[in-house]
Amino acid sequence: MGVAEELGGGALFIDLDGTLVDTVPSLYAVYEEFLRIRGANATQAEFDRYNGATLGDIVTGLARDHGFDGSPGDLEYEYHELVAKRYRSLTEPADGARELIVAARAQDAPLAIVTSAPDDLARGVLGAIAIHVDCLISGNSTDERKPHPAPYREAIRALRAEPASSVAIEDSPSGVRSATGAGLRCIAIGDPDDAKLSEAWAIRPSLTAAAPLVDAILGGATTSAPASAIEVVVKDDCDRLGADDALAQEAWDAALSRSPGLFDGELLGVAGWSAGEGAARVTTCRARYRDLIASRDGAGPRVCALGVSSVAIIDGAVIVGRRSPEVTQYAGRFELCASGTLTPESAGDPERQIRAELAEEAGIADSAIVAVTPLGLVEDLGEDCLDLCYRIDLAPGTVLGERSAEYGELRIAGLDEAAEIADGDRAVPTMRPILGLLGR
Image (cartoon, rainbow, N blue to C red; front, side):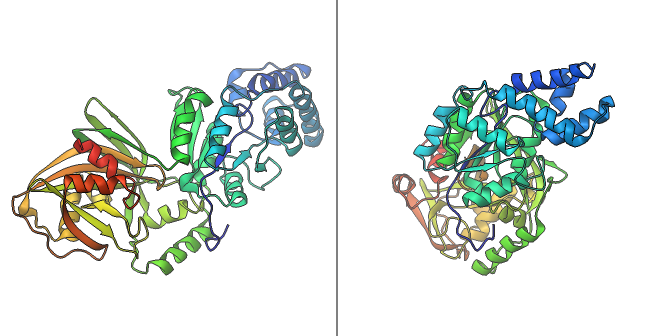
C-alpha cells in the first residue's frame, strides 16, 4: 500500500484457528493421530511450539524432530486431509465471536481473517460457521508467514485500513508478533500471565472479555488512569521485525511534503503501562519519530508515542491553544497547553520536559512555575499515543509570552470555558479526560 493512497478507517483483523473458532482440540487430535500412526508420542509442549504455523512448517518440523520418512509433499497432504476431516464437524465460532463482529460492523469496521491455514480449509471453516468476511489472508496469500508481518500488512493493504485505529486478535506468539510488526494493536486471547504473549498490547481470556477494548479502539476512544506518581522505564530499543524500509521511507517522504519542518529525532515508544494504588509505570523503548509515521501506514512495527500533557493554571484559569493547520497531528483543534513528545533524555524526569514545553509553546519562564504535580495517564486509542499528564500551577498574574508556531492561537480560558471546548468537536480527544483527571 503506497502512502499516496487514501486510507479508510479502522478495521478488525482476527486469526482463525484458536481465536475466531475453537479449533485447538481438533488440531491437537490431528497432531496426536499423525504421530500415533508413526509410533511417536504427542506432547503438549511440542504442539504449542507449532501453534500458529502453516501445515507445511508443522510437518517439516515434525519429520525433522522425529525422523519420519516420506516426501514433504506427501506428509503435508496427509496432514491436510486429517485436518479437513476434523474441520467438517465445526459449526459454531468461539463464544463471543458473533457479538464481537456485529459490534465492529456497527462501527463500519471491515473484517479480515488472517490465518496460517491453507485457503481451502479456511474458506471451508468460514462457510461452515456462516461468517462473512471482507478479506481472507491465508497461508497461501503471502510468501512470508507469521511471525513475519507480511500477512497482516497484506490484509491492511487489501482493506485500505488505518493501522493506528485498527485492532488484531490473536492467540499465538507468532501471530502477535506478525500483527504488531505490521503496526497494529494486538489483543491476545489467553492467560494474562502467559509470558509468551507479553508482546501483545493487551491479553484477555476470551473474545467476550476483549470486546470492550475492541469497541474502544475502533471507536477512537480514550482511556485514562489517575496517578500521583509516574515512573518511566526505558528499554534498549524497539524490535523492527519485518520493517519495510522502502515503505517506511515513502511514508516519511509523504509526511515531510505535508510538514517540511517535521521533527526527525528520537522519541519513546510505549511497550506497556500499568496504573494502580496512585502510581503509574510506563515501559518504553527508543524509537524514531519516522518509525511512528511508518507504523501508522503499516510499514513497520507498531509505535505508540509517549508524550507529556499538562493543565497550566493561572489565577483559576487554564492555558488553551488551537493547533496550527500545518501540524501533522490534531491540526486546527484545541488542546490544553503545554504538551509535547517525551524525549529519551527526559525519560527519567518528565517534569523537566513539561517545563521546557511550557517555555517553548507559551513563552512562560521556569521561574513562574510554582508547582508541577502528576495527574495520571491518558491514552488516545485513535491516534496511538499515551500522555503523562501534569498539573502546572503558575504564579498569580503570570502572562503569556510569545507562542510557538505549533499554535495558531493561544489564550487563557476559564475552567468552564475549557470544559465546554473539551466537550465539543473542536478539541483533541485527550482534552476532556485530562480535565477529568483534574476533577473537572
